[in-house]
Amino acid sequence: MSWKEVAEPVLTRMPVVERPAGHVPFKRKLMWTAGILVVYFFLTNINPFGLATGGSDFFGQFRSVLAGSSGSLLQVGIGPIVTASIVLQLLGGANLLGLDTDDPRDQVLYQGLQKLLVIIVTALTAAPMVFTGEFLPADQAVAGALGISTFGVELLIFAQVFVGGILILFMDEIVSKWGVGSGVGLFIIAAVSQQIVGGFFSFSALGASGFFASWYGIIVGDVPVSLSPFTAEGLQNLLFDPGNILALFTTLFIFGIVVYAESVRVEIPLSHARVKGARGRFPVKLIYASVLPMILVRALQANIQFLGQLLSSQWAGMPGWLGIYSDQGQPISGLFYYLNPIQRRTDWMWFLGEIPASVEPWMIAVRLTIDLTFMVVGGAIFAIFWVETTGMGPEATAKQIQNSGMQIPGFRRNPQVVEKVMERYIPQVTVIGGALVGLLAVMANLLGTIGQVSGTGLLLAVSITYKLYEEIAEEQLMEMHPMMRQMFGNE
Image (cartoon, rainbow, N blue to C red; front, side, top):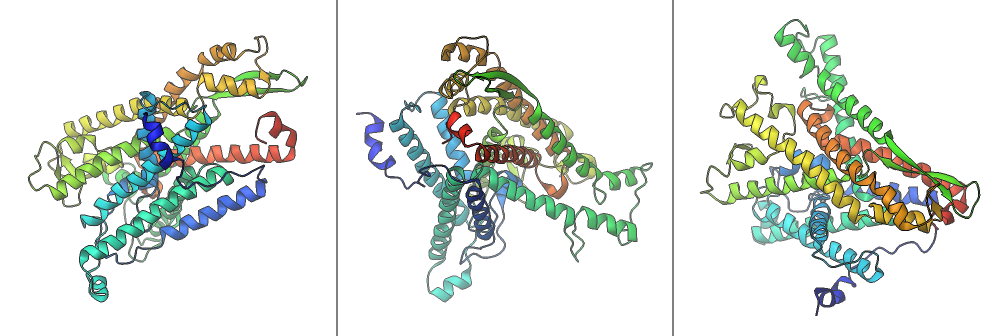
């Protein structure tokens, strides 16, 4: 008896959001998408009952990638969804699952297995955050008022965070089936947009303010600093705090380079076999696998650092070669230090004086080399997995073109022939695009961005927004020309 026969009764009974029976009008898709976005913002502003203040957010440096909000019902964000995807992609890439995604029965098993893994990972992620007391401490006053132990309050907090993790899973599924784009992408855009808007426009009476407020203070004299580019101090003030010219440049540069990279493509001409004069093009973009594989790479790094943080807090005799942590909970030496990705310019610019004295320049160089290698190589590998498991590979693409009634002019209308043409472009572009996205993400992290958004988060947000714009334009085109839905199998 195979594992599929054993697990089928469980996997086929997993709760699922039903797919629409027919075409969903574009306006209704927008309403579903906007509604889920409102619910997301609402849940990120609700604190679990029984939570005390003072907990740390270890995922803070990965928050723009993993979405969610620290100390809220969506504490775990999209982390469990991404982690489950990593596990399934690795198992699928090694052909250990034995599932044929073209078989409807195996498709149901795959989706059920993914959902089950998300539920398990949600519990495994929320449990150490709550029961170690490091991230989500229990309020002793609530325990006293309810007449229960601290552990009882922790169980209450865990249940709320767990439910929040399950809610974000089904919110993602609703957007994917009834809305526009994907829920994961939508939540990343929402998280990054909040940080960028705050980075530009926030004002505070305590002096911590955004880009425009800082320059207003400089101009009116409330922030008396030298901005002369001819002195070391003035140049530092101009480029970094409070001027933040370098962060502004990096933010605009990332916007421009991602939009440009998304527009670079090889277009393969297509013609319809039965409709004379009906022509089209199949675009093989430079970033063919999109930037979503970067989420998988960063999530893997986040899980590694989460493990190190737990070991440091719970293992009093942890060897120094594994990691030595500062009072702020960040590794300053050891294996976990070198595996910790560089998230901001203060992580490597030792001349700014914000790096611990025990961290030497050669240690920073080793850490940067490992981070760059991890992102470039990992980006390429996960891009390959992403293309193969999401039906974007040469074989799957050839079948889609064949089923839509299209063909490549000058070639026989045969899936094998189309597949060979696609093999000239897709594998190479997938690797190059994945590596390029990894390189851009590291570069953006090195220079810093407005709002302290991680370079990876900004990269993801811009690319996902660009693709969302393309999907909206495609949906509008399909809405105006219903015959195109039938031609391309969207009806």
